[in-house]
Image (tube, rainbow, N blue to C red; front, side):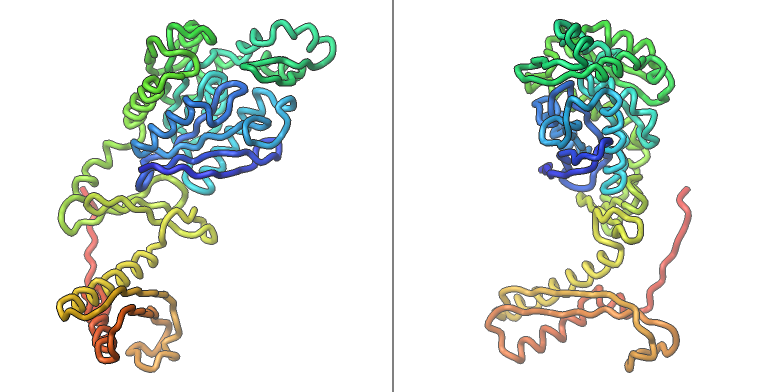
Length: 408
């Protein structure tokens, strides 16, 4: 089952921005970034439902509140379209540094306009999607047209939007009027998918046409039929997530992974491949199992999974515990629980009294075993002896030959 984590990062104006990271069950196929609609929040139904739907299909999604909105710090009145775009860039930086760089960016309504402006500034983006997006940010001016004279005269005015009051400053109007997205759309050089409802009364369908015409191929358009602007019907949000996931697969290198996925289902085959998220993150495939391997931040990793040595110790620990369990069950001994703690280090060979190597360093694995249950001393001693006979232990102590060949 997908899981949702609360996270925070620093926005473009130095404030703490509240976010949620929707994670799939297992290693993410990709990371996506979602931008919500004007004066909305990350928790609006469409954002939450689409993010969950994508996570169910293996795509992790970060959705966040822009500065001054939702649970994020800062004053909305001090923000504008440019600061929203910069917040998106900061969100991408956070994903890249802490999880994996986003390769999909999605924007709803004015958030769609923001992702069109930001996509070209995030090098890892491979696919862009807009939902009910205006062709230019100035489109939102009609929402506070009645307050425009006061804003022009006083520099700001209180405006009621969607039942809530916001303070709109003249700098906001000046900023949205200064942006023309047609050039950004034409030069972003990213595959684009445009979702729009022909019955959208908030952002007319002509906006979708303008975005589509300005974009270069590859580009696609999906009509949302009877959907409203906010995608308030559950089935509409699910449909967007399903179509988006299927469309994005074409640009995520999924086809190149199919042969490896098939190989990983063969008995005894483990496939390890780079995810493209962060410097070191790897996806580990073994039959139906999907795991992550990584390195800690101290060496440039994102700490999204155990290290290679962590997996080595895990293999030895699991084998040790399983072997003792199998022996205890066969003997009908009252072993209630076995626990194995392991640590890897390198020591000077000269400090090792029973090592054959006398120069340089040798690998040392310290293994501490805890046996729970009414076992007598003789049974405990025998289980410790059996621990040294587990297959992985024997493999590590025997001569190992590794062959390597280049595929294809």
